[in-house]
Length: 376
Image (tube, rainbow, N blue to C red; front, side):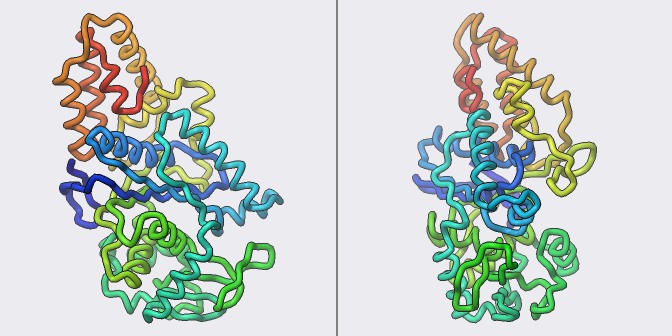
């Protein structure tokens, strides 16, 4: 198997051992899952399925960010407890992902379950001389970590722009450097708070994922990833704080999924230009929704449109027709071709064309479709 690695900037061999440790950044459960979310988790699902097919045991951890600025702001707006909001949205998310036939993940830990681990990790970062206390918070000092930038390869000006756009608060007066990032912060009066040796407060976003990844999978994971919008600052900061403590590689391979847009603009909750998975499932066969997403290579940015669903529904009908009125079994050559495309940087869109040809020839495609998570 060969996969594109973000840090190396090229497609490289992915050669894990029998057990494959993987971490996918999960949702912040303050609103319904949209198709951009689904594209990320579906990519990891396809990877899981092929690894199982190859005889590996994938251990995919997908966290739940149930305490951060976004969920606390939304809970405040709704006048509900943030954990009640998280529970409601996670129930919807789990139902949507199950409908799309995603395999269960190895573990799905919540950030609030890891407060002791987070406190311990922050203490270790401080003790190693990579952080400082200021204004009731704790900040990572990027000047102490020469490898800062090794994941994203961005220039400092580029980092400053993205930090401002993505909640990094470069203007924070407590920071020695605008790119330093928060590990622990004081809580507002109406926010959850935990006791620490730096004062009461709550964790920063980045430290949550490091603590959860290392708690569940160890100091080094085989593969880590999420959407491309997480490369900086989230995954850059995760790497810095983790490796500053362990002295070893945090992730051997970085896999990032392109953004799904609508009318030329990236889908985001802040803009409100979302296509929700739950709404699609009310009107469309879940297998068609899955096929609509699979028709786009995971690394590309693309725009959602109705035509994707129409084409996916027609494809699904052709495949099902071939399996019910088949003239013969699917050829071994076709299944081998599907596997080969998956091993070539998860080129699912090419694998779909192989199965289209099989169906057009009147041969069953159920085995190949099942490898893609489509049950006929």
